Image (cartoon, rainbow, N blue to C red; front, side):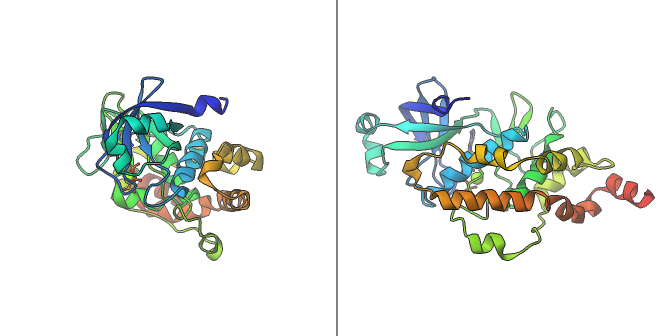
Amino acid sequence: MGERAMYRRAIQYIKPMEQGWTQPHIFRCDDLNTYVVKLINNPDGTGVLANEWIAGRLGSLLHLPIANSRIIVITHDLLDMYPELKKLDITSGLHIGSCFEEYGVNVGEHVDLSDCRNLHHAAGMIVFDHWINNWDRHITQANLLYLQDKQEILLIDHSDAFFGPDWDMDEWWENEELEVFWGPLYEKFAPYIDNSDPFEEYLDAIESLEEADLRNAIHGIPHQWSIPEDDLDQLVDFLLFRKDRVRFALGELIEHFPIWHSTRLED
Ligand SMILES: Nc1ncnc2c1ncn2[C@@H]1O[C@H](COP(=O)(O)OP(=O)(O)OP(=O)(O)O)[C@@H](O)[C@H]1O
Ligand SMILES: [Mg+2]
């Protein structure tokens, strides 16, 4: 898809999302879809927008069900139409949004997944989170939606990927070994994805990625977000370094997967 096709112009302000640390807002855009928009002047800065953009593109590369990010143009004229936006000191220019899923609920303890049609992607989610160090999904349980109408899970909110929006490169290179995540969200999916080698397909997919794929994924970040080129180069190195280490890290999770575990013992 061309870059321009990634742009949507906001034509109507709907309301604040009223959930989420980055304080997203809901807008209708010129394609008449409604978007959950993270703003350039959110409390965590433009790194949030870059993280969403890059993670969204990496996730699509792996064919994961991940919210499709669009760059949302908010014009001066639109801001002039809504005094409440003026009060919030919203800047005009380029923000980021994902299509608002009206029937999406956060996958927490009480969500019944028995009718879910794309549960196998939960294995991909776990691989992906480790690769990009998306440390908060398994803890908060709020960054995965279950779309009740489509009966599918959808990965959202990659604000905290890459160790967080500040891109602390010392932290990136501090440990050769990847931190391993486990918690109630992943636990919920374990019975559905357990088999003789639950992560193989997705590990294979990230290990086969090449530098050019990653360069393509970081492409298209608006200048207005002020992300230095050097930082983007380092991010590519960071991802290349980690992609071949996810397999080893996930090996530590075997005890949570009885079928995988028993198959390994038989080998
Ligand atoms: N595309 C969407 N469709 C429907 N609901 C959404 C969508 N995007 C986000 N939400 C809802 O809004 C909440 C906040 O969004 P999101 O998690 O992206 O923001 P955040 O500020 O980064 O959150 P956090 O507080 O986890 O850092 C989500 O937990 C989810 O319930
Ligand atoms: Mg969130």
